[in-house]
Length: 531
Image (cartoon, rainbow, N blue to C red; front, side, top):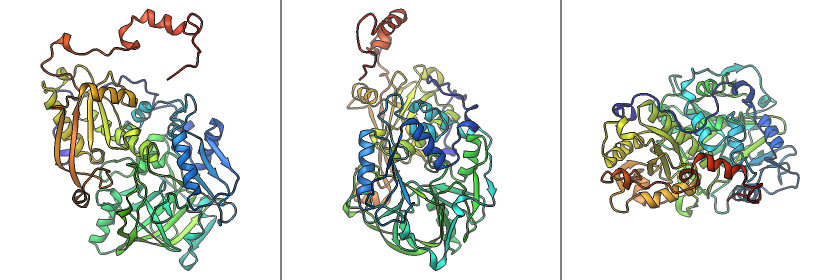
């Protein structure tokens, strides 16, 4: 059953106001939309979120090792200016949307990418993106020329091996040219132009090979072309407006073109430029563009690659579809952005996870569910979606039983494109901050009954990269999913419901203000002390 066929949550039909302070969606659009990767790097440089590395680095694992270390320490995004064996001027950017260890800037790279202030919280980012489709769409604007046309190679002149593509992890099956780029594909009738992200591995000077999942939109567009017996035209844009990957990774509904949605979100059209050899447009800000056709039946071995669950599976090398390249264009001194996928957090979690939460939140609100927030905790590696609901959810729905409500919510969310990714949902009252992993862990182990608190949903569509799935489940792309019911038990009286015991809850407002104001002056604690 599709999301559109499922009934709305009874009674509550209006969007539910969140308890999170959210920046206004108007006002930042034109002034904060960074329209190229280079503008984004300028912003990161000003924030201290860019580490420019002049030392020559090796594409063979060194770029990946440094990038991975940046994720795990919260260091600034590394910009490698000299790559061994690469032509002068070719550069590589790692960790483009990683988290930061700088005080007050943990989510700065994500926030700035999507047009929010660098101090925005994770829930504010989700909230802003969840309302993207509330704005009227603004189609992309085609321009005649762009910097990515400064260097043009077609036919036999194409040589992908000129690019500084790294071998990212020890054990990867090859050098991955696409980990943060946008694949552009259009349905044969021209009605749907899809922008998406999927991993692609270099094969030789003019071919690539990558995952083309039938669950993903690029796989669905590819199937349309196969149905008429033609290879699918594609374009791969590497490095562009920093907002683009967040929408390319967002599980929008089938048939929704990302370009107009992005335009509506930023308040102005995204500029695009025509490709050289295929009938497609790519973001005009692209650093590198690779064009060609995704073949009908040609396959070659791809993988393994360390992936978002945090593991590399050596036996996961499989035959995948072949991309045949007919053109390559790039800017002067081009920058290749890369992600060193694996143990969280990295961009699969900060970009894809946020996109999942935003689209699920939008659909739940649209259909009347009394939700206040959604979040995919980065540490859970896209394996858990936390949904918080208001304390008066029983009065706002036709459900009077917590288990029935949790099951109905699971039925709905698992039917959504975003819900197809996550194998577990944790539903809990909104006294829990779903973006705080400590809050989530505490609430999960203290509120979910080990016996009847876990509701099973067998044989549901699932991403075969989920770490726990059996071999036969991966092949069928189905598994058992679960909802963890953290709502108060129905048999509790009002005075039996546990009350959170912390500073924010148990003390009068006046006393809390006194303690906070006098933390250093009255009590002598360091002003910057935090845990």
